[in-house]
Image (cartoon, rainbow, N blue to C red; front, top):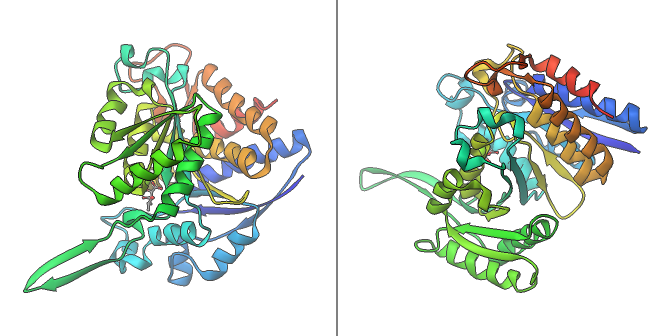
Length: 365
Ligand code: IPM
Ligand code: MG
């Protein structure tokens, strides 16, 4: 198979972790007889430096022309980087939001899974995570607060900022369907998260989720308020299978979920539209503080490449091979610094970004 992959290395640790994911894809290509053609696409701070905007229309067109896009991370230190002295619509993150919207990537899948080997790195007590947990956060990605009208203005001498949270029933229905479809392939449980005790948008969310649920008699579902969900994630993460939620709640809860897996450096994600196209990226950020040091964890990006194989190209065996290689490398005791056990453990070796990529490649069967 020939696969055209747009590659957004981006900023910070982006180029380092992307290099490892490409290594792994190339290894898969060799073993399974596929050709991966990469096209570099600029987005984020590096695009601002080159073109004064975080994402050019040409870059959007290049992404659209690919079968899938693999992304590292974008952005820099919001306190110190000159990118954050630009107007908001010209900052790195605006590029990512524009790309998601232009490609209609409304369904964001963020799996959070506790590897047996990383129990040590999990900040929760052992009895809470006994037996592990395995959830999929389905975040709506092209609506809500992040895309509503916003402005800051002076009203009667008082500076006032406003953001708008809008959802229509169609936007809710299509993500709800995706959530229930995914649940059918998992443990058949959906927890729909909202703030229906306060927000109108959440009350509509709840109504549409209920209507959707009627078409999925095999899936059990429940509603949960977002504040309670934040609490339940650390109290009893095992209860969750699919968490279905709107844009901002999903942004926040997915960071929380990632942390209880041990490190945000472990979490892949896929952003999908109605076609086979997808944008695949680690859930973590650009980590400018460790950029260029060769210590970033490339696993989330490598697992994102596995999701790309699975969702955009239906290459399940190949994706399984990547997942298995990651599990094996952890079993064999290799860790990047973010997932090193606090109290030094026997048989555990600390490795850098590139070494981790090599070790995973060696384990691909
Ligand atoms: C994420 C990030 C982005 C988001 C930022 C960079 C705009 O936090 O993918 O979770 O909020 O969606
Ligand atoms: Mg986020």
